[in-house]
Length: 93
Image (cartoon, rainbow, N blue to C red; front, side, top):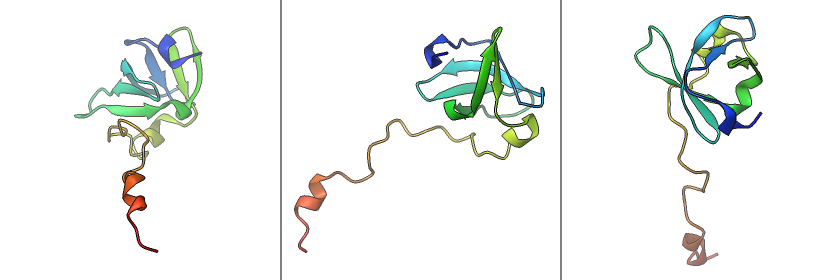
């Protein structure tokens, strides 16, 4: 399944069957997830998705481990290096 096939409102569960939350939005490499009882959303990476069936996204880890994964921080907008290659052109070796 492609990330573009995932839809807001779908459920997200851990591999233990524990309910993690609900899809709020889908990015290219993550699923923005609303968590009941939490002040912030989670950015679940696509790499954590194990399976999708019947509008339910199953993760590759248990529900109780999700909070410790550091997914509350939004992902970088792009994967370009922090410094541009042009800066290296003026280095003296």
